[in-house]
Length: 197
Length: 243
Image (tube, rainbow over all chains, first blue to last red; front, side, top):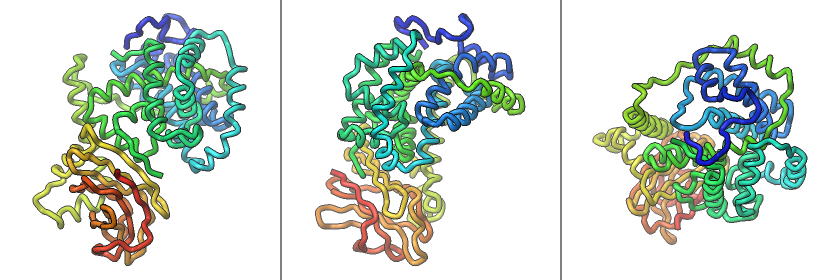
């Protein structure tokens, strides 16, 4: 993993100098103390992400626990050649959150029910603003996207919607939404300086 | 609902976990044969994961101890076999396994069909050759994916490659047919329905490779008497426009 011009690949929180990658590798060898430090490093974002997707705090707690135990259990499968440790963890977290949402609600109901909440969610986003560097960087880069790219990506990622649900929500054509997700992510990738060696 | 989809451009939706189960599976199979797509997906996934930076929230303090207690009594999975620190051979090896695994999943999904019906239909075609035909369609550069819900439950998906004049039809988790009915696929050209294969009794999932799809307008699904029919019986349980 190489970062092109990105200031930092790890969050400001946690022990500086002790990256998630080495903590995850130590975790894979059964090091519980390393796992505890990894927890401190990622739990805020794992919980926050799951909570954002699921809304419900009790469920978010339960799924966060499942995710962190899965991280412990499958740490040996992490392959640094295919990405960073944090991305590996957040991918598991997002996958689990999305699976939970989809197993509980029929697609069309969910879309109809949540349409009014899009605005509410926006307020929450504004309130949550902090000075954290990564957060600022992600937001700055999200602003470089077109409105449709940004909406398609954030509804899918934070809302847990499938792209056909996103198309319904945005009243846009399916191929358009699919394309915007891809070219939006590519633009975001270039803005964040993400590359996988 | 059905919509034409160029498989390659699903990379973004895939990285965002925004595909439904059927499409995800097909895209996984496509990935197994497309190294450019795998690199792109790795980068887009890494990018998508950065969005978690903006979702930070303080977790309930008790959660930390709950997790630490649980992992103390959770056995860890063994890491996958890795040949050496050199990446080249390992990745090639893994790719082959991924292809094999992806194809095995599709063939396994065909269930009864792969093991029994295939033997009846043409003993010379081995399951291996069938797997290769499926893979060839899924990894074709012009492969297009379309999905529709089936009346009564389940999904019908077609991955079509006009250049190969072939398609993979997948029926997933449809309602189990009545004892005197079986599912049958139809390729409809204008007003002419052509039988495109039927399943056996109690079979509600299948994966089929069909040829001669060029110029066909619609893929249809009906229930017919065991053994199949020459003309479709109404109602049409699912239809996917192909053009």
